[in-house]
Image 1 (cartoon, one colour):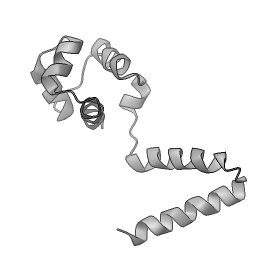
Image 2 (cartoon, one colour):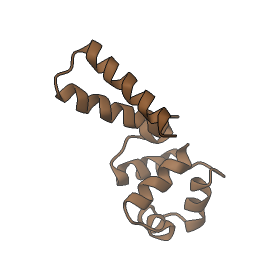
Image 3 (cartoon, one colour):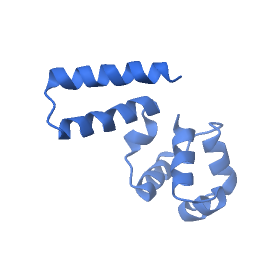
Length: 103
């Protein structure tokens, strides 16, 4: 969700809610409400958040989960090893099986 992404980006940047609020010129309660999915930022503030963290607005709004993001990174890394499509698919399937076994 949007709030989770804002919080994750803020924490990765080492900012408190108050510090982020100052940077994008909003009250710290706004940051709290956005991160807790109590409200959503206006488009202008959404753009400021995206610009500040150098991400796209689409990234902020997409309903993706960390598994999809991890899978994209893994796929890119495996492609760099020169795997063809068939072996790439097999490698990703094996990794999914291993992940399920560790849960």
